[in-house]
Length: 70
Image 1 (cartoon, rainbow, N blue to C red):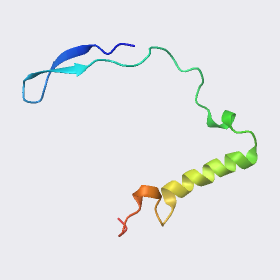
Image 2 (cartoon, helix red, strand yellow; image 1 turned 135 degrees about the horizontal axis):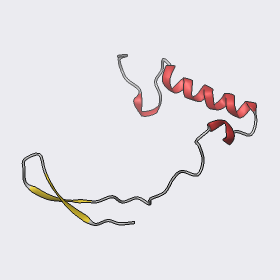
Image 3 (cartoon, rainbow, N blue to C red; image 1 turned 90 degrees about the horizontal axis):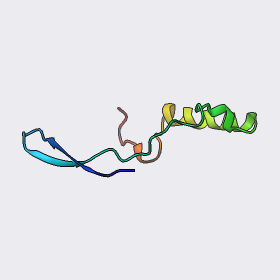
């Protein structure tokens, strides 16, 4: 990992130093198939129900609750 400083221009044209790439090079080990991480049908259904509730619920979710609907 490298955290070298790189000189770039800001929106005003001034030179500024920013942190360069700070990640480990490589490729993902898995394909990201969510079904492989579920042990049985009940876990799959719970996963899908939770996702649908997040996107389609009337009451909102967590910190995204609004006083008035959009």
